[in-house]
Length: 449
Image 1 (spheres, helix red, strand yellow):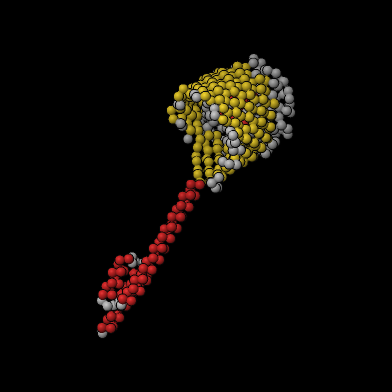
Image 2 (cartoon, rainbow, N blue to C red):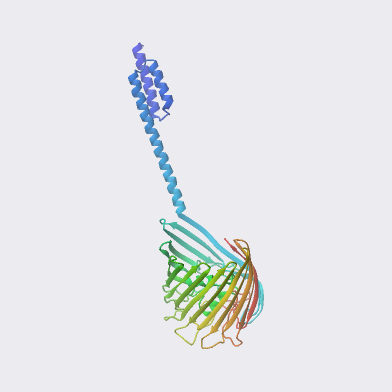
């Protein structure tokens, strides 16, 4: 083979090798430069050819590095988008469960003294699912599904630890099933089943840390401003909570007709608010409710309360007026599901003292004055006190005592333990109501998760 042919063959091989390097995206850099220099030294490439090839390789390398940077940038952006989406979406499973031991007198209509394992003696057992999504920096959407359950029987839904309401079925998410939009600047809009302001105020202004035993809840059910019939929780509800302005938060809701076969079919209204500055807090709510399929408002409630916290002690007091506009001199005192429709004035006061962050004492006094046609027969006074030890934020251990005095000719049943169903109860009877005075002790624990 002639020298010119060998040179042409070598040049072709070198160019092919160089093309393979470029086309295959093999590292150009110093390796390619060294190859070109060898070809230049052997005379296979001229200096001009060397410069052109080197420039071409450098351009290819720049393109490759640019593409790689773009790929990395795209991958980083995808990861950032995914992380941002995950940050905007939240899911929370939460709840609480309480159980204990009780010993109480006159806890049935018989009446009889009873003792045994209690169900939700402090706060209602609950389990819930909360799904949230940030719509933008200002607005967040949240779906809440929450159910009551019994640790004694395993029943689920519709205050399962107490009434086990069955008419029309067992709604599983009996406590909450709603959608809300939350904005710090514009307030909160809630649509669906859930608590209204009355429920929030009953809890916030009661000195008793024990909600179900000797607290404002059983008093409120008896006197018509707390109950499962639309007074403190409502179906088909639209509720708006304003942002705080100078400590004032306004709260309004309407319940559009309740649920089929539930206790209310008429439209209920709730209007009130809260004020908080420093250690002082005030609350007010007005309720216009139609209970038990009434075409007219037959339960009207006005709740006003105050509390003040100074260092380790919190003092509270309140007044509630409930009236039955459709029967001004009548009414039904009862702690059953259909409570309400009464004429009564309720006053309450209490104190909470924190010996230390983990140990506190509470006491509450409650008085219901019967304003209906029975005129005083269904008056009652209740005093309750207790100690709560919270060694961890998730745990409360408590001991409580409560006593109720009644008029001797009382015609309405009341229970200091809302809402206990004794093991001896037959279906539809045997609840804890009594027309006589009651007293009892409750010991137990509550766990939050």
